[in-house]
Image (tube, rainbow, N blue to C red; front, top):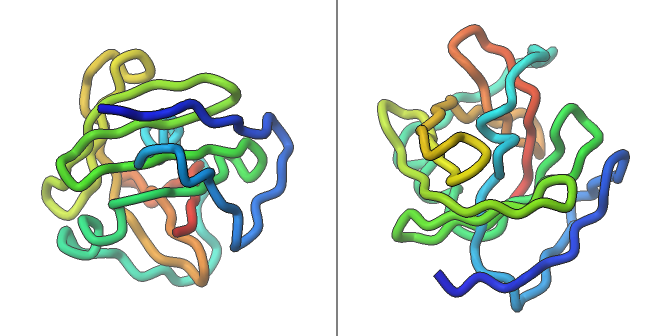
Length: 141
């Protein structure tokens, strides 16, 4: 896959709209969080993305917050490869879109099993949302 190491801030870090990843890091996705997520519901109206919109959005670097405090860095390649950094840990896997949901499988964090979530846009953020409308993970592009 050819991903290089990346230093990621630990818990309680703030994420701004222009949070950048080093150019030397390959593409990674919203890590284990994206699939370990779900828990708080969104307060304002959100726009659910289609499968094509998710495919276009999910390529490249993704910067996110898990439970509004833990920084998540991820990168997803066009061919479905995935790498993510979460609380100082790194995992790799794959991603795909199924039934208008992003599905990710990480070698360690999800034991290779795919976890799927809808993606909704809410202001400048995208939320990974379960079937009950709950989300613990939000990210920006």
